[in-house]
Length: 217
Image 1 (cartoon, rainbow, N blue to C red):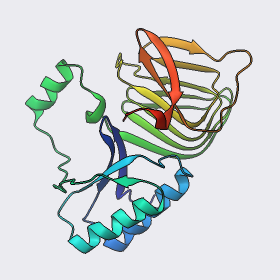
Image 2 (cartoon, one colour):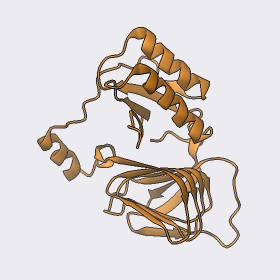
Image 3 (tube, rainbow, N blue to C red):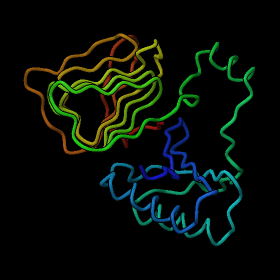
């Protein structure tokens, strides 16, 4: 398996792109462009911050930001490019978990392909799936679920009770959605909308909105 040197995470302030600078810069650049190309415009219009594990040069940062712009993303103005440290203080993590702020602490599972009838993906963190989730297939995650493709099966986010979890898909017309145990079934006549959507929990009800219309992860 190819080493994953670029990790994309969603936050309330936009996208974070974590860059493993132990890898060759050419590899970072190629992986970043490949992820955006695979997303097929899903991230277009989103703000983005680059978070290298060690400092990048000014020229390298500008080159990566240019790739973001090429695919329709907006590098955050005035972003400070501090190294991203993967190891966190255990006491701080426990405090954040006790407060219910779990979203950014979870690992992200990246899978590609087509999820067929009867197949299941389950993760103790977030799931980013590049491909189609067909009817009868299921994705379960303790955190968020992001499908860069058609979500026609079922998706259960926040399965450990995380009510801040969300489900995002490039095309969202599922059999069933659930967030923190709250279930929503697809209507009998589900209109297929030609834009990405986000499902989240509001007042104990799953609400689906256009992805780019609101501030979000």
